Image (cartoon, rainbow, N blue to C red; front, side):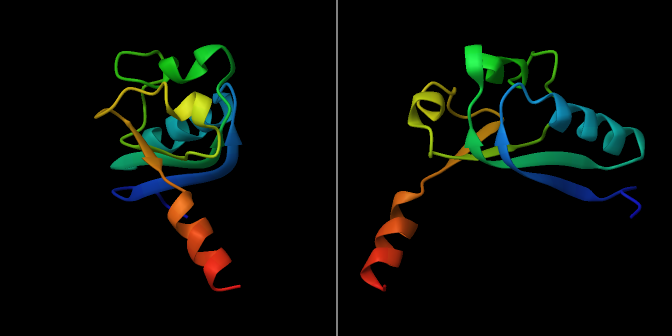
Length: 100
């Protein structure tokens, strides 16, 4: 499709270095997307690779970077109030278990 003047969210199962997400975002922005965000279910980010996506990082291209807290050692280290938005899985897990 044509991303021009669209708000885009890239969905991926997990992120490590984030190279693929970064490249996708660059292409979408170059093609005219008004903003690009990312959602990843599992933020692995070895060696604190998330810092590259934070404000001022060399891969700071996303309006929002959504992650679940499936890997709390990563999400607990993320700065609050910036590009990263952490989605808590526990309410859904409790609901699903209660309604199984």
